[in-house]
Image (cartoon, rainbow, N blue to C red):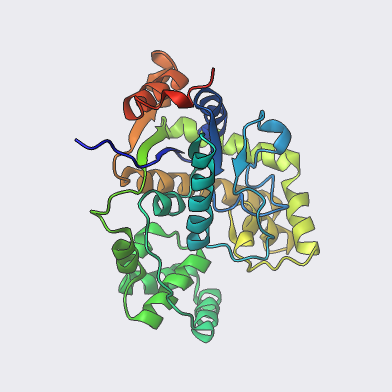
Length: 326
């Protein structure tokens, strides 16, 4: 049998606040890895607190990629992420180090792992604005119902309050005549072989405990100055309808700053929507091929999370001893 000469790629995914960052630093040191952020929000400069971005002094000497690579006004996309991430993997591999994607944006990560093919889907700005006005007049749920009627698969993945992506899915259907979910399925190619030797690891834990961690993280973000961060972005001219400002933490605080809801309500909405987001993350990851789960509660009763993860990596990359740090 011919040896598998595809480059190895380590991938660590899991819902927000579960502890991917701390584990990734441990793994990077052991396996001589460089980390590629698989987060759709950490690409933006000046958006640090709300994205739980690891600052350079906190990275413990481990190289990180795809962090702070564009301004908040830039409409960063999954296709751009795929291109930049693929380039980073090639560069890291050429240096004799192990590339490791760490993050929670499922589509972004999966697009790289399986080489999704993205086609230009066109735009209809007038229709897009019409749908935004429809949501403002009739409510987000009514807009979401319109999507469910033409693309139930996409509607099932998107929260009604994620107006930007709901509008985009409706726009794609109008421009192409085909549901976005169908096009994404064709892009994925269910039988497509990955260009990499993959080791996919997913973290999970008791849902109630995860939700407590999420709420604690949000409290810490607020104490660290999340409101001031959002205010500064708005005052610098970043529009509220920018892709970046539609991220969790930014749209809720922006609504508070605009006088659209009290501070306490904004915080409650942020915590609720982040819990919902974590649930959708887990749902997405469960459909990823060949992903091996590590339950933090089970690992804690045995040899620990780090040991459990290393066991999985050893099983996937048994011959890659050159990656092990001395």
